[in-house]
Length: 497
Image (cartoon, rainbow, N blue to C red; front, side):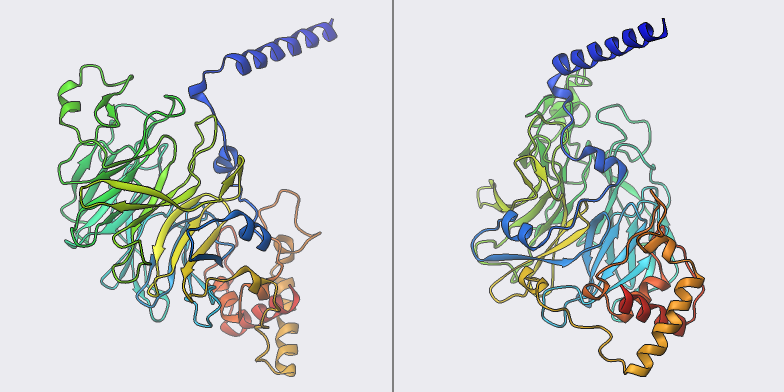
């Protein structure tokens, strides 16, 4: 009897699965690395062959890897010292990647500046402060760019609605000295009840005089001011579940008091099928996009190239990272595009960096774009945890061929006696603090949260390891070590792993 019941149950399940397969509405398609996105799983770091074969740029440009092991790398900022700030969103950290001073096109080290933050995303620099947007507030800390140090965190604005379908918050200071903040919707499409949802705010640098600047912005992640005109442009992610090609993700020219339509309209004042009925007056008064990227491209970070430091043919252009689709029967996005603004107001979109997706195989998802003091372009990838550097002319870009050459030994400056002493002392500290349980093959528990130590000399020097020990990235615990103990432990792991 039990066997018959089980067979009956299995049959029902198979019929249900077949029905879903045959009749599941096309508009509800789920495709791409969605499960990895939900679980936080990271893709493998591309090797030399993959970078060389997969990525394509316009003639004259070259790409290399500036830094690896930057988990869930999201938004970036260039500091006054030329270093690169990166938010590591899921880990709750803000990481400082040291500028390339030895000319190999790669970060010369890193410092974990802030830890324990609540979904840190947007970054801004103003005055003597580093500003960070968490999901529920904006904070700041005194920041010394030259010394690569931060002071104590203080809250600037506490009133942001937390979480939701779109939990990231992006910030930036405008030419007017005000701090602009974007807050995404809590849903795909709905009538919001929380203040500030689906809008852009602005406030003074201390968080005072906060006001709603624009509304109807479903999820504006990237924004920047156009050089020369001062016009504010922002990317916006269009709603899902209306099929492969509807509606567009947008670039909007965002102006004070503007209403950009969501949730009652999409594209150029097209009524939304769920919430557009009876909203004719609001729809007519809403503003259409300046440019449509196509549906489900998920445009995130955008940046106008710096006047005087852009390559020929890119004067006045902006770069936009298209994170890539999930609700589409064939994948779209997964690239960086350039936007060229014509004198007639028309915007031309061109492919700039492609190869993150090829034949439905995804190796990365671009998030943000920044330009360094030398003109080099940086692209963050939150799926592989990589920062890419793009250059032209004689710019060094971390050519992958360099990865095949012997790596300079970060311990070469130590004499034999000092190195031996530090390695022995570090081995004791490594054992006493139980580090092997999280970092050594064969001793890590199955399914544990540790990270295998390997090839450290290719990525860190002594100071870089010491910085990690001072402010360890989650879930690594913090240890009460003296400066000498940190040095010993750093030398030991570099010598051993």
